[in-house]
Length: 436
Image 1: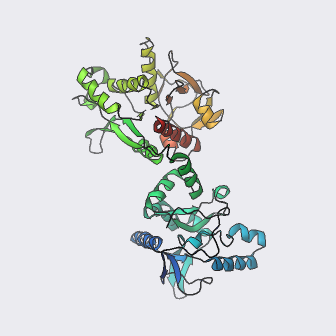
Image 2: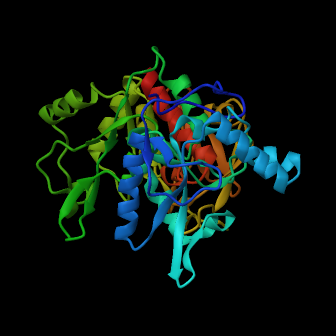
Image 3: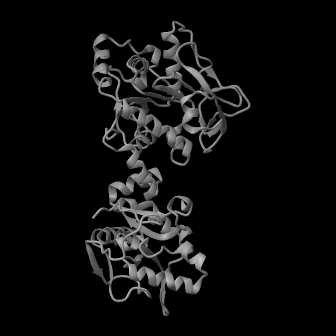
């Protein structure tokens, strides 16, 4: 059975449709709609048992309140609501027969066991589930077992259905995890697949993230890729590797200016890695090395899609100016009324975008809000790159070369967790890598 089958106000099932893989279950909350034992898709049921068991390990009790409903069952459900509510409210909250996901057998309405006393078991089943701590746990963990929250309360315009805190839909762990990470409904996910994974765009781009010099929690020197960079790229369909420097040097114990220059063999090692990449991301950090510059220049010379973030933007600016024969390029300490180095806030300041740039064409906005975590900025540029985005205090925040390279001074990999503009920006970068 297709676990991505779409049933909504615009996609109807035949009244005689009975899904394959249904099994009868007995461990459900007694229903006033379904006669006899309840049915549900076997895969969905087994996945729910795993979710239920994991919840129990955390001290939570969840149960199936409703699952498969035939066309006839859904008609009874609608009639019952019409008797309780006015007709318009009923059809807004309850799917018409043939338009209910429950007819697929893949939908499960869950309930929370709140308490047990002399009067019996007390369940939470209604709207109060939105803010219940057990519901929140389910929403954060259901994707691991193949479920999505089918009708989020902020996506009614997309799903055509009032938000339902109890309604889970089984799509399988792989799809559910992608949808959870991308914050997509089923409608949005299917649209995403149709646009990005047809015959011409099925390629999975390999993106290299330049490794950053760090210390582990045990104070051991490491070269690593930040999780939010990796997660954001993977979320958009990329495969990610860390580009490690080729020198026999302990970078943590030496300043960039004291690191020996790359020799021919070391450059050849980098070349053998870089030639296989579909895109390169130079991340933020506190300092860059010659290998950052070499990687950046290789990407620019070979027109490999390149994204510089924060310090990565400054690295690109340095390389761009050097290629123009202006090696005196330097970064400048921020000195304005805006504090550009704030770790906490989701939004710090606005960036004014100029028309005629890729980012303006993508977002179609004159101004966007961004976070800010930098103490230095690039000043101006002298070669291929042009600044198309400034903060209100005049600091360059976005540049591009009109080809496949761009730099941003903020951190879109962090903002992609909650901000639509930066989700689109990171998606655009991955897609440019996919196209090569």
